[in-house]
Image (cartoon, rainbow, N blue to C red):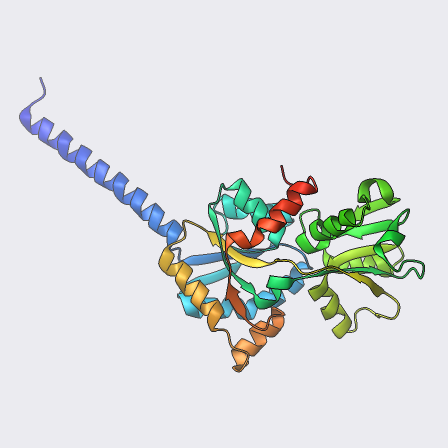
Amino acid sequence: MTSFSSLRVLKTMFAAATAGLMFAVAGGAAAQNTPGVLRVSAIPDEAPTELQRKFKPLGDYLAKATGLKVEFTPVTDYAASVEGLINRKIDMVWFGGFTFVQANVRSKGQVTPLVQRAEDEKFRSVFITTNPSINKLEDLKGKTLSFGSESSTSGHLMPRSYLLAAKINPDTDLKRVAFSGAHDATVAAVAGGKVDAGALNISVWDKLVETKKVDPKVVRVFYTTPGYYDYNWTVRSDMNPALQKKILEAFLALDASTPEGKQILELQRATKFVPTKASNYQAIEAAARNAGLLK
């Protein structure tokens, strides 16, 4: 027979274990929602070294604004950025419009877009070539074309959408379609004669022209798309609301009239950041489903 004192000891041990388990669960939730480290990533639409260079001043700024250590974790491809956020390995990601849609659909609405650049409200893509016989989208028939990544909004989805609108099916009307993996790689493929034409985001194109890494007299733009919603900074929806607010306010407070704000905004190729919402990307989702790129 178990003695009364033994029962009391067992009850005490059970209560302590239960309390410990509850503390561990609560502590885990708190750690996930208000982490000591803010883990940030971005779709790899440019070279990893360029992404790191562009992010560092912003990361230092966010660290001061949130009181957290900010770590930038590069990913190998667009899909990895989506999976990283959904699987809680990353807290915040710089998504293109399509990758945001993918993450939103995959997570059943468990991701929240916080901010976008003002420029992302009417973002555009450009089609480029060195071939003098290509002057409009219809001239691409029978030619070779490079997109960026398959999951890129501005380097694939929207250019494909406008091709389809022009009654050109890239998979049947073009001689060959390639995927370079990144916008700057698309420019290199066109400049190097590997393909007749390429499609990429206008921001990267403008930067390459400004820094004289491409000669627009040799590689030229022959078509610019209408505007559409694109990039944003997205967080997990279960992130602590107070932390979400700090991050949002930090982005909105960036001001080009201050040295710090000017540096960050120039690196991000932004005039300012503005709030955004999931409904802004409904047209991107519709385009993706129409193109058969989202099931």
